[in-house]
Image (cartoon, rainbow, N blue to C red; front, top):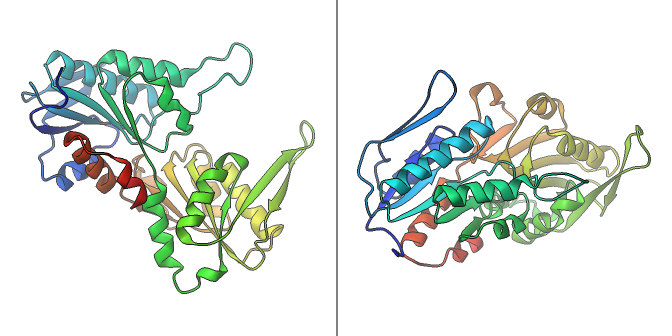
Length: 320
């Protein structure tokens, strides 16, 4: 069994070719020659246009909207590389769809994240490289190695630089109880205190009651989350921080900008001054507004790929 291939090759499907191109550029490599098209009936067709025999292949593909199309592209591409005798195949998935379906919330629920993990493994992937899985325990759904990168080491320096002149007046806030660990780590990197927004629904069809655990009065607040989907939780938390907590201003950041449904309209009309996202999901031009700042994730993925190929630990990237 090959520990790794004879050379590195970076390929991409259709979800995020810009990130794949930037990763290849960081590594000083050309992007692999391939074509992923869709037949008129919706079937995905993949053509690999160069030899990958014995190579260490990295397939870059976020399984973002349209999730099922991008998932099938990834699976078929992995299968193509396996049948072309690639030395090792690593699925580089900056954003993994279905990750929120990680448990049975009620009777007869599927655990879709486990099913997706099985599909990727069966397709022929030897390793997974991803960033900020919605639930870190998803790593255990795979029977192959998973390198789980974090968005915080990329996002935190942005705010360290932004608030360096008035750091004593800054607080990090978790928008819900599920993001407390992430917010705490973020606050430690900034060297500032953190608080929590606690929301509770007293009974059905009654508005949620927001409580701020911590004193944010007259503070500049940074809300930290792993992903923003419809932006309801984020915008409501920001409003509560101003209205209930008495904060001076609110910024926000997240690793994944899913931004579905009314998300852009909500963010545009919210009290949030600036939202910083990574480009793990390609942001269409119509969703690019002045309030949103995009930061590149490619440099970190390129370093991780280089370390994986050289059989070096990926853990130092968590401390950058």
